[in-house]
Amino acid sequence: MGLVYRTLVRPMLVFQDSEKAHTRSVRMLRLFSNNRLTRVFLSAVYKTRKKLEVPLFGDVYQHPFGLAAGMDKKGEAINGWDAIGLSFAEIGGVTMLEQTGNPKPRMFRSSKHKALVNRMGFNNPGSENMQVRLQNHFERFGKPKIPIWLNLGKSKLTDNQNAHTDYSTTLGRLWDYTDVFVVNVSSPNTPNLRDLQGEEELRKIILECVKINSQKAKEIGSSAKPILVKVAPDMSFEQLERVTTVAMESGCAGIVATNTTISRPNELESDEKLQETGGMSGQPVKDMSTQFIRHIYQYTNGQFPIVGVGGIMNANDAWEKITAGASLLQAYSGFVFEGPSLAKAVVSGLETKLRQHGLDRIEDAIGLWHKENE
Image 1 (cartoon, one colour):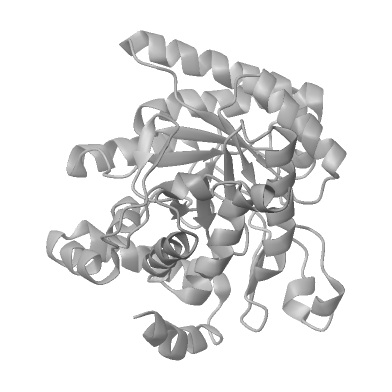
Image 2: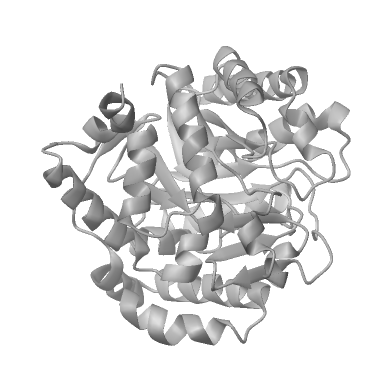
């Protein structure tokens, strides 16, 4: 099915507006996965039967591969991500207030370089509407079969001084419906958002989220849920270390590396679509994110869980990030360029990699690069 997508479907996407193609794809997945019969068909075609279990964040993930934020901003296709074989899905980003995002066009695609540029600007229904959406989904279908993560963003109308209230309000409203929260202070498409990666600002946001998280857990007598921080690939290693330290000291459970980049390598200069303003994801970000993963792993002695995201198009890319130090993986652009069979191909390839290296568990491969290069 992956070959069919690459040879028939992907060439057709060249003639479609990127955002419209994205919206159609998510809606189509929602349509097929919300129907019991077609959901069974999706699972039969795309879902892997292999298990590469990763116990982390209070769950046992069937394998390391999940969906990155931005693909399913409204949580429309929750059933679909499980049906095509992902072990978890991150929905959003969601902000406290509803917002339409930046003016269109705001998404651009380069098939040649397997890269996307977006300046969406956290377009989303807002936390109150999202609460209703997720409640309706739970009432109709029950609790999702895979862990659902929530990407927390800041509303454009909220100034940075009050960002902690914006993030924590969304966390509180959607606490009942998600398993892991990701504090996104690294999107380049909301003015001054990346300023929140400063030590003082970030600590204030995390501590307020931890406070609300604890209150919600206490109300029902359960454990607090994991909170992660998502970082940008455009900071220095020194800045990355400071952010990592703040995350660890403030009670975060891990870090997501990385978000999109505002940089453009010289070899992309001839591609007009990739010169558009916004964050770039996809293959050109692969090495940047892997370098960040290696640095975080080394800086924390492998004691702080890392979620690797950026340019994963196949099992080799996934293996590179795991051996660099990532415990879990996410993809967004990979699904655009490789299609819905990506998860099955990656998990199958990872199992082959384990056999080739004489390893029994995927956990044994986490940080392997560091051991081999000591």
